[in-house]
Amino acid sequence: MAAEDEVIVLDGWASMFGMKVRIALAEKGIKYEYREENVRNKSSLLLQMNPVHKKIPVLIHNGKPVCESSIIVQYIDEFWNDKAPLLIPSDPYQRAQAKFWVDFIDNKVYETGRRTWTTKGEEQEAASRQFIENLKLLEEQLGDKKYFVGEHFGFVDMGLIPYYCWFYSFETIGKFSIEAECPKIIAWAKRCMQRESVFKTLPDEKRVFEFVLERRKVYVVE
Image (cartoon, rainbow, N blue to C red; front, side, top):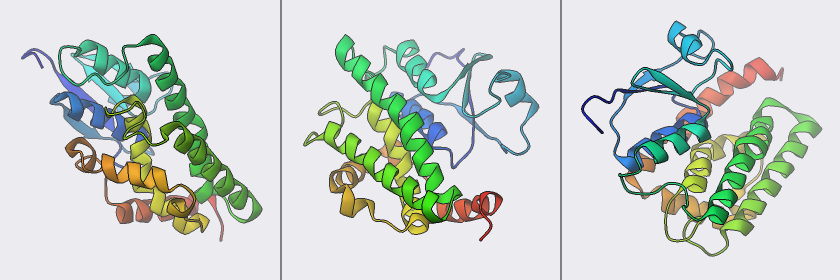
């Protein structure tokens, strides 16, 4: 990073979207200032830097904001393109496929995962089934490869791996086993966890679970 570069990340410790950004920065070796946001009491800086969605994460690079996690990762890869590794495939078809699956994770996987702990009864059972079905689609895409694009950890991997620290919460509340249904996804996740960028970013699953239980009180009356 050039001496004049100032990088700030507005984020929340449990956000899988924010984890994706922090993993990307770690992979590139970019130093940054982390600022924890309270999403229920948003800072004036967050509202100023992301006035449209008012959400985390936000990357502030030399005073200029970049919003939406997947766009931020693409920005990181393009701006610091002189720094290895390449996070997004250079081949147009592979790049298109990677963006497709990251979009799938950001929307389908996130939404069904969220509903495993924000609902109950039949709605929760349906969400759990749909979540597993989504992971099975990703497992088919992964196949027998080390990572989603082969030998190199990249865009799709860093989009999905933050969910790993949430799996315990999804499983415990939703009463299902991801490893029983999607063993290749768990094996892949354990490989990813061997990377310093990942294991230093992901919080402990039990801490996430405590956070989820508190948040669940907002959504569900037991």
